[in-house]
Image (cartoon, rainbow over all chains, first blue to last red; front, side, top):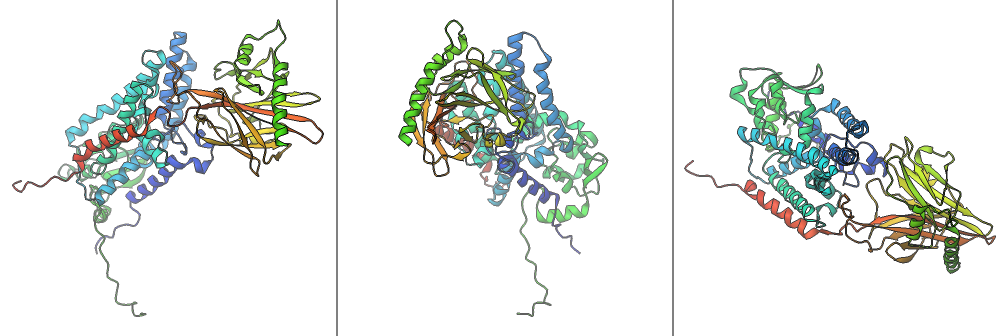
Length: 351
Length: 282
């Protein structure tokens, strides 16, 4: 008997969670109340934008930049030394961030981030529009990785501090937010066009605005053919990666002699991670992994790839699941046409 | 009635202006400067300096009071804190909890009651100010519905609602005066529910403060809303609510440039989404 496509696949569950969280992170303020919306957290490990007036939480990156600019940089400039009260708010902010992180680890990227969801939806649209499939080579995927770390260290950490010190212009105090495509995506989803206007108050601000819009335009169009184009350079991915070994939630791959010839897991991976194909153990859970679980869904070997929380296996690969999943969708995300099932002759005589 | 109220409002404001100045020889330099810079004769609580996370200094302008009532949402229905006024000024202190603070000073005489009110936000954990705003805090009140959130503010071109209440009841079809630090003076009217819809005038300079980090918000003006009425016993009431409002959302911004760069980014990505012709020879 042929394997039936399961009604509730991990992919469908993830899509449902993504859509719910897209609503919460973009429009959640309308659920929790006008004033409460910005009090839920300022430390969500996903790109929920503070510039979105309807959202239900804020992204850790704006908190980090703000505190490094005003609490650390300006205080050092005024006092000439470090004080505990400069770094305590930052420490508490990261503590809140980590409390979220303990539960879901980098699944924030793959299951909750609104920009990640938007990119996935655009990619699905690209499949419907028969756009070509572009993925990164193993070399390109590895070479692109340092960019997100450079953005985190340079734009999120260093420039806000130097702005507070007065070394760089004040407009560099929240420079990442000024170029972040999620700011444009989430505000546009609320019908707010203010953020897409380029500010012309000074040359540097104009350049940041121009960069933001160009990057956003690129991401929106590129996502029709390539999976998660912005995630590959997202500094929040880097920040999440810095903590990924500390959470009990993780991806686990055991060694199998069949893996090297297969590699379907890498085809299914939206981040084109080479390690999921070639490595096992800790190495397979690479810094770009978003814990989306597609590699586990498309692994044809029983129990080789698992999503685990502590000792608990939340999902493990199996040949039967793989065969059923493959019938509905290819590893690259191409939906397969539904086959019309003939009705059984019996029971149709009531007409 | 309405014209009479406005006349009384103006006369009272002028009277309050004459009465509020601190006695000669005991000036509070900051508050003298703040009052001198006051743009209106209506009662106000004027910020005197930037303040910080621990506290914020204010000056009374155009009214005299011995103490200022300070409420924050964390206090629930508890009586407000009473902060003494010294040399026409006071400092509102941040507690460990409570973010939105309602500041209110009242000058009562046999002739009438003059009230100034404003809101101050501290970055503290605390409840929403809905209950605090709902609570009757004076006879004649201007109640913001709602207050701007932490990272927002009133902006030119935006319409915000205020409820005008007298002894807990909405005041219908009443003229309310708006004066701004840019010199704009307008009168708005409440509707049948006592709700006032104020569209802030486009009189804010677009320039950002020099050397400041304004998150692209540009400059800001101060405003005061004031309403006055006389009750059946002939007693007058004059109440002001003052705050700040910023430049319009599209000030110093270009939608055309934004769309242009958006299109540029999209064009750069076009080669990725165009299906290349297959080479028949492999």
